Image 1 (tube, rainbow, N blue to C red):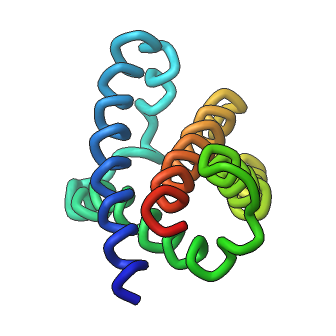
Image 2: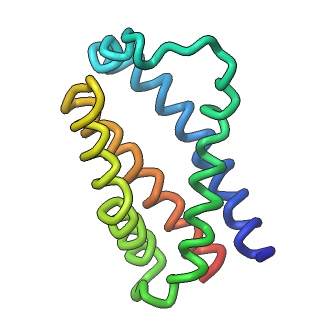
Image 3: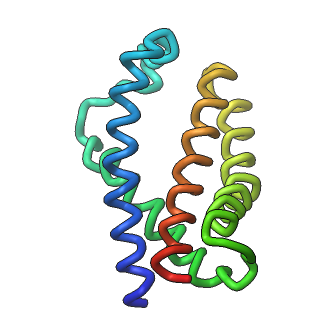
Length: 135
């Protein structure tokens, strides 16, 4: 359990920094993508903002547990193990969530694709951290 918490915390810190750095770069270089977020669906009164900021740690702890449970199934170098981990997670978890989100919410295909790629990138980075720290 200690290994899960430590690797989850390390991955969470890395994902937090990369996620918010990427958000600022994305807004700067792809402003058209973010215009779609000017929608009542995405506006809140601010009471849940902390939940949004904690997402990197929530996903990291969940993925850390998943890694610890199934790491023996991923073979090869740490790079290949991290990539495969990210792809497996994306196919079994992200793809169905993106499908239901697109089918039930008023969001664009570009949004869904960007969310999928964002989640895939997070999972690969977390997988690389887990493969290195908790082989």
